[in-house]
Image (cartoon, rainbow, N blue to C red):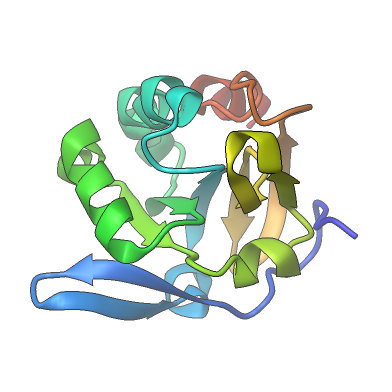
Length: 162
């Protein structure tokens, strides 16, 4: 069953590239008492994720900040080396977007947001979605009909729904 508006996020830990290598990041430390935007992508460096989804949040970051969002987090089913490099290449890290890896899809599966497309080599990947989370509770969830789309889950789509 997929997560819905009004649900609490499951407990989770992610990996992020730190200055000395991968570090564990507890989801509760990012969400407790805070308003955050979390968007999830099927994979770093994949076409729509790289060319549309991440850039949409770079473009709209200031607008989210103006709406009281404390942090924007991108979650990808990739290792922290890949998500770290991807954040650098796209400019997401420089823009202040937090890039977190869910390398074995634990969070993605707990959310009920996983899919597999063996023909494309995407195994246990995340569906494409974006959500607003306030104090650990989902207050707005925009999920795409398929992972090849980036409309309602783009930065502009989420802003329009807020």
